Image (cartoon, rainbow, N blue to C red):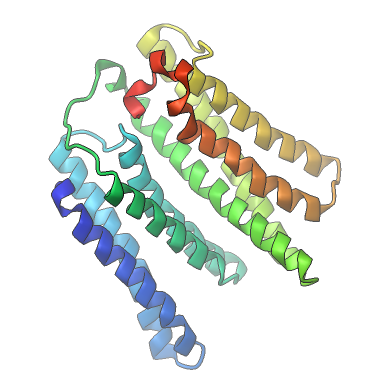
Length: 265
């Protein structure tokens, strides 16, 4: 399966998520609708997983090189986080945000399609390539979910409907995301040593990766200082902007033109 098939697969995934979401309304009164709703929502993610696996086989390399390819993984991971949160916390609304974000990223890929390119530069032919990028993408998906949750909690607080359970969920999503962000940073340093002979070179991408890590370390520091949880929801919502600069924005900086990470643009 190649990028020619992407629009069909992306459309199928979005239709499954949308139809499954609408069926959640009658699902409150009917178990049959509930089962159908969940089957459809999970099917949307299964369709994307199938496409990713087939695309990997067609490329004869992991589809993790370009921003478009990483968006595919992100769109696959983030709805799963929404499903797991509902299973763990019984919070239903997060999955809708997660599926909407996944649909948005699929839409960006549709509007800006990648070129089918099998080549993998020598620096990417490393055992650290897959774990480094996948760990980072799962971390990004978790931190996106924590940011969405943070903004949702900010709105709830404005409406005097504060939810301790929802604030607790956003905290644990950020905590888990930070742990994976740390592993991604370490894996990247080990990969850089193998590929370029240095653990760290303050390349623009590396610098922003470190700034992102510091932003979430700052969040944990504020938690340890027993900062008002309502203020921390603002922090989580805004911290994700730093992560987006690291993921997308840094590629447009003039200083990034000579970056060793230009392959990811």
